[in-house]
Length: 144
Image (tube, rainbow, N blue to C red; front, side, top):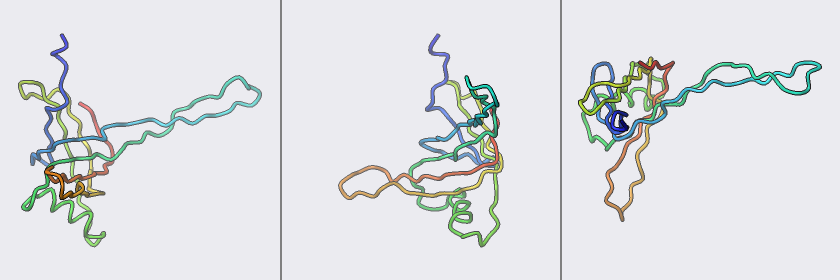
């Protein structure tokens, strides 16, 4: 029975139909804020009312691609250009796959755009891959 659950290491990521390989995707979350309201004359409790929902940035990590990446060109045009060019948004799809490669769950991040680019620490005493991280802000996401 436990083997029917999807595993987190089988996933696929796509930007406008272009697949991209990543080691890690994080930040898939949504949270609704709550406002506490005191009612006059009622001192036993506070009403907890729902307000707006909030999300985190989507964080993508992979081994550094030296050159020729359309994704890095998009990051460069958005983050490094200093708003000299209009920011281009894209829908980003993250799919969790089953053991046969079929989609179990799909998250669609609408109107995403890069807001941060970073590279892992470079160490002369190690032999780790250089990992680049890209953070994307987005308007909202859907789960299907």
